[in-house]
Image (cartoon, rainbow, N blue to C red; front, top):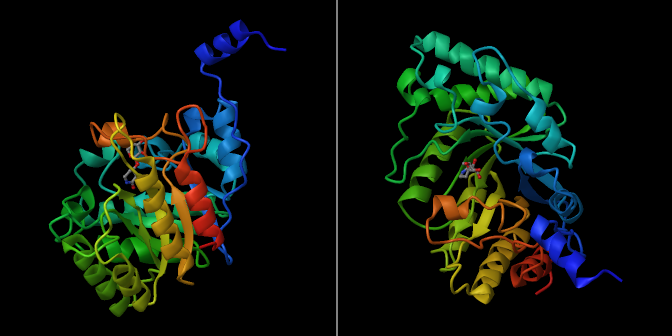
Length: 325
Ligand code: XIL
């Protein structure tokens, strides 16, 4: 028997056990996944939850340029290697406007130099991580207002940086599935109109984009014209993956049933479409979630609580992904 004192001590140390729950399996030949942080993997409960419950992992930050390419021409694959130990990986992300190192953001490069830098990065990272079969090649290139977002890439290369990124990625690893990934494009609105228009133009020009990653950082409100929007991506001939799902609530009065219902709606929408290939949540437990920082006053957005106990959302999503009504 463990004394109450011992249990209190373990609690105080923040030790958590992995929950005794079934893995999230997705009906059909598809995957569940979770974003993992290399710096949390020393926590057994965290690591074991990621390993046992989910089929794939996405490095939450370890493939961002500031981590993997901290100096020009110097790559550090140490952090991402730790994430890859947990399970098969989705590649996130090759070209983005955030989490770039100063040498890249503040360097003064000619257009040709910047293209060469991007090409070298894509080739080096993709060839090093050959077992990664799916990549978010370009992330968040569209602004919330619709035009392409300002970035070191748009400024230094021009709008065709997107074409180049996908073409380099195809050349670097011809068999990998290549995704365009963005947020706020799950439902009808300015953003999804602009993302759809971009993807349509890319496909028309023969740019090798295979799928769209819908991040799915949402709250509990119904997503407008959700089904029709998903169908519009599929109609372009694209695969769809929910790449970064979390459903934020007010941590002071969390409506866990509304949260569960939102997860279930998204899970069911994926399972209902053969072109939806996978469903990834953006973190293991509420204790690691990026939401409280990104959306002040909101949080508790994930499937497991701070102590790794399953929330109603876990069960709702498990049932939805398994194809149960
Ligand atoms: C977030 C991470 O979760 C945070 O740890 C980091 O501080 C900022 O980036 N869209 C993306 C992800 O494509 O890479 C972002 O991840 C969340 C929004």
